[in-house]
Each structure stands twice: as structure tokens, then as C-alpha cells.
Length: 97
Image (cartoon, rainbow, N blue to C red; front, side, top):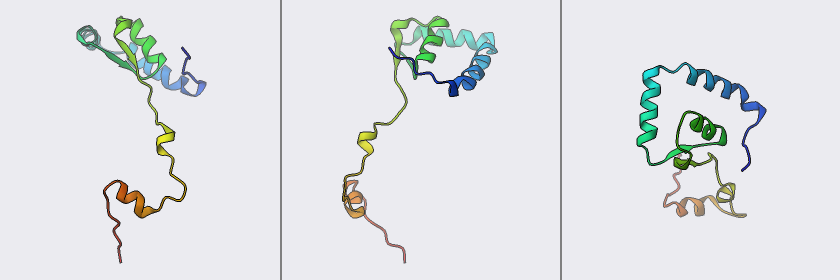
């Protein structure tokens, strides 16, 4: 498994770690109870997954789901006209005069 970590995100991770460390004990108990009762817990990167494991979440419950877009699905066909694109979504062109 490849770690998705870059130096640019280090300040944000440090900020989140401080927030997590300063969480109220009641909040931490509520989180642990929620994780224990959950069938699945979603982590959006390896760093979050590792943090959840350190906090006691059963690794078999954790699912990684990375944020992002499939750029292939967003490519515009060559020669696609505006009218054809709009009609493909069931929309009509509005002309403002």
C-alpha cells in the first residue's frame, strides 16, 4: 500500500493532531462508542486510517475511500457542441436577449 502523504499537508495534519489531542474526554468516549457500534468506518487516506487504528478502531472495520475525480469521465469529446452536451443532460439552451 502506498502512503498518500506529502510535505505540503504536514501543517494541516499537525493542526488536526492538536485538535484531536485536545478533544474533551466525553467527546472521545462518544467517538469510541460510535466506532464500536459501527459496521464500517470510512477513512479518506492512509494517515486517517492509521489515526483511527491508534484510537482503537478495529482495522477490519476501516474502509479507505480516497477523495478525487475520475478525470477520464470528465474529458470532453472532440467536436462536442454546446447544444449536444445540454441535450445529453436533458437541458435546453436558454438565450438571453
